[in-house]
Each structure stands twice: as C-alpha cells, then as structure tokens.
Amino acid sequence: MIFRQLFEPDTSTYSYLLGCERTRRACLIDPVASEVEGYVSRLKELDLTLMYTLETHVHADHVTGAAWLRDRLGSKSVVHRDAGAACADLLVTDGVVLQVGELVFEVRHTPGHTNGCVSYVMADRVFTGDALLIDGCGRTDFQQGDAGQLYDSITSKLFTLPADTLVYPGHDYRGNTVSTITQERAKNSRLSGKSRAEFIELMQRLELPYPKHIDQALPANRACGQIPVVPQG
Ligand SMILES: [Fe+2]
Image 1: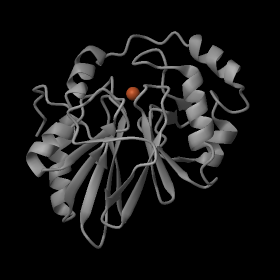
Image 2: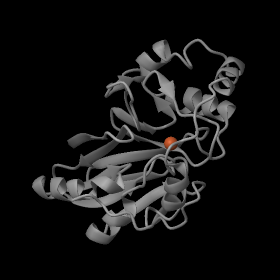
Image 3: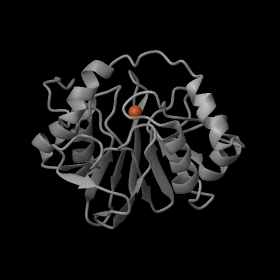
Image 4: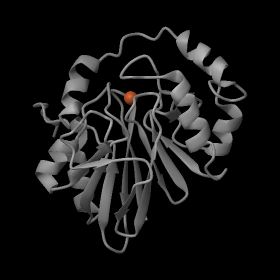
C-alpha cells in the first residue's frame, strides 16, 4: 500500500493519499482546494490514478479540493447522503464498502460533529475526520452538531474497533500525527472515563470562538468546492 499523510498548515488539516501498489489506483481523503496542484504532481510522481475523493464531512474550516480534482483528473467525489452536498458523485451510507484497487474502505456513519460525518475503516486504520481527534473530538455547536450523538458514534462505532487500530484524524493542532483506539479509549481527555451525560455537559461548556472560515467554506463545500477558489500553484 502507498500511504501519505499530508498537512495543510493554515487550518491544521490532515489529508490522506492511499494507493494500491498493484493496480496504481488511489484515493484522497479530505483533500484541500489550495493544495490541489501538489496532489496532482504527487499522484504523477507515484504513478497513481485518482479514483475517488472521500470526504469525512462537509467542512467548516477549509474548502474541499473534490471539484477541482474531479475536473482535472476525473475522480469521483464521495460524501455521506446526509451531508447536504448533493453535487457529489456518490452519496454513501453506513456499511457501504468502496474498493480502490486492492484497498477496501468501509464507511461508518459517525454523526455528532455534523449529521453527515463518516469515518473510513481501511485494514489496520481508521480515518475519523472531526468525529474523533487525538485527545479530543470535533465541536458540536454548528452544522446540526449533537454532543449525545457524537458520544454514541465514538463509543459504538469507533471504540469498538480492534484495540490496535490506527487512528488518523482530520486535524491536529499540537503536532500529533497518529494514535490508536486503545490510546484514545484510555487517554482522550473529553471521553475517557466519561459518561454520556458528563460528555454532553463538557461539550456545552466549551464556549469556542466562531469558526474563522465557516461563512465561505460551508457554501463552497455544499457545492463540492465548486465556488471559484483559485488553487495555489
Ligand atoms: Fe469539521
């Protein structure tokens, strides 16, 4: 398997490139519009054909590169059917399996940060978007966020994965790159040892600032990133 964890520093976003060694087919999880030129040259360098862009959700902080990549490379964009982005090529639901060459991705619906959040399970790893972060989780005060629902998603759909499953989040603001299910179950300061009611109370007390780019990013992402945002070359 070809695997690259890519970081966009302005919004501390992680995107992931995964490719099949045998068929040279690839997908990108949560690509960022400003990074599209970099993805195109990296795919070329690695001799990979981009089949899909997989969104973990409709992002409030950055514009997706899905539409740009679809135009440039013919990839298909994938998003959960409740995410509010009907422009996507594939609207998926819980349990859907996507194949990229020999790589198999299972969609798990993990709502709570938004109602259309999914995680993608692939072999020994899970891409959790903003549902489960390393020692944290996504906020639940925008985009149909619901703290109780997020608690249920994390505890029933993610913490039940095999203990050594690698956790690759959608963001990290402290330089962490990867965690495991065991580590998050034991040490996640928002979730570890907390009841559902305690988690809801904690999330209600966060008083987070209004997200910086939400007014631009949400409408753009509901259109799969099609609003003219010039990718930096
Ligand atoms: Fe988000």
